[in-house]
Length: 127
Image 1: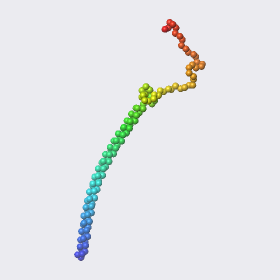
Image 2: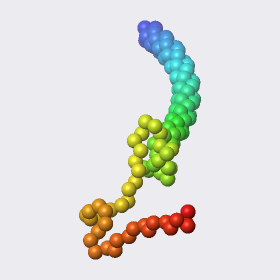
Image 3: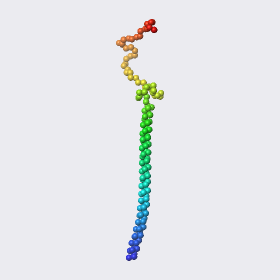
Image 4: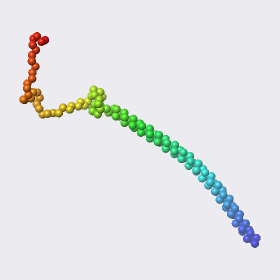
């Protein structure tokens, strides 16, 4: 019977040692979990800060692109696309002077069938 008690006692000691090891491993895992949760929380804060910074920079980029487009439009203004006189067209650009006259196919000078007009001489007393 002493042999059976020793066997149970040995099993009991092994279970206590195993329990201690598992308890220690459990404690280490809990510590690791808390550490990882803390790191995760920190990374989430950093991620949110980076997202906010990215949004600010994207907004700034949009503002700068709009300003560039506005300034390019100002540079491209001339007599062809705005109501600016051709005299104010920059020197390096070709001046476009609009001509709305339509060709009618008639010869130059007086036309046949039209009355002739000429200036009369001044009288000597009109000068």
